[in-house]
Length: 500
Image 1 (cartoon, rainbow, N blue to C red):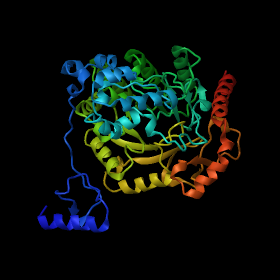
Image 2: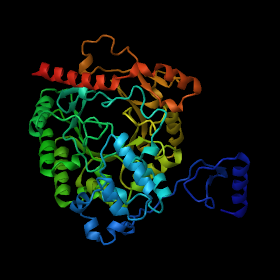
Image 3: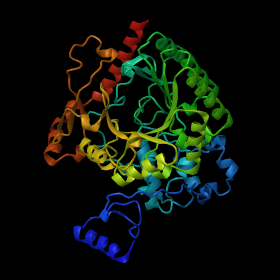
Image 4: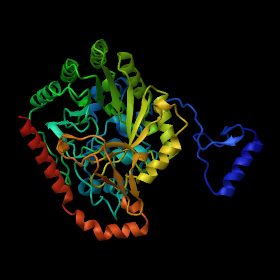
């Protein structure tokens, strides 16, 4: 860029009092036909950070790092292990902050694979606090809101998935699609997990729900239900994370799914493609995926992988290699379903940096969800209006097929693009949504398609009048979380008993 243009840009920035958003340094080209763009694309070479900068991993070899077994065996599960790994990189104040969160706020137990920790900035305690991946994978007490740590209408099973179980673990919410929760564990636990009611170990705040049936029996019931329900064509195979299921058992289940004639789309849900890419690079896993993809093609079905990347820095050469390995094995797509999380990916620049990092390395940007209304999540959540502005801000930069939809997963409704809202009380942060199909719960409800369903913005994002209104009405929600969780379990059991 010529010096005169640089000076014009700097002068414009200074006079406007704003920072021009760009993915490049200010001395590079940020104009098209002489006009400034809010964002400028540049392809970045992926880098695998040097894990030897961590005192606890100074002797770890490349062969060990690239071993799935080593990665799983060296996950950080508690504060003591984190201290041993970090040495003197972090202050004692950080550990006290973390310990308090574990006691008083955390809905998920700590489980961090080395691969994920290695993408975090540990140059200083301050840098670690500010790191986007740390902010959602290793939350501390000072991250959380103190005024409204939870929304008054937050709920453990915030999407009421268990209430719509056709059989235990099989959520039939949409007319043609189901969610099969095969297992309640993951190789890594995200602080914002929407299935925190079921997934992972119990914490001081949350006594986790447990499946009543043994896994083989649950899986058999799922397959039997799908065989007798021809309107279902699409199965999301999830959990938990399918990477935690022994491969032979997972392959057998998916192979049996492919024997059901009405099943035409199968999606394997795994954050571990990013969290432990070493798992998906194992010879037996790659060969098994190829067998399943080949069978799917032969019978006119499609097999895809859905992963969960929230920050551009998580895309490393190993993650890209794992995505490419799955594509070479024959899966239809590797798609990303992220979650909008404040301090992680809630600027246009952050979102576009992430989307281009994905798209340039074989992963299709697909969805970004508003963070669900689980307990202690208010510091992460965005308002609907903020999400709408982000959707507007990212339009036009990516190819249309790779421009992610930002969606609100509305309880009892399902995924809705953020601009599909029927009505929106911005003052009180209450949005109203409609639906165009019935779940099994509403089979005999003539008003299901006319009813309006509510979703709620974080209270701290509202104007003063809206915050005051909630202070007066919050008591109406007391006990609602426990009551809804109990009702959800009872409803799912009633549906199962009726089916039997």
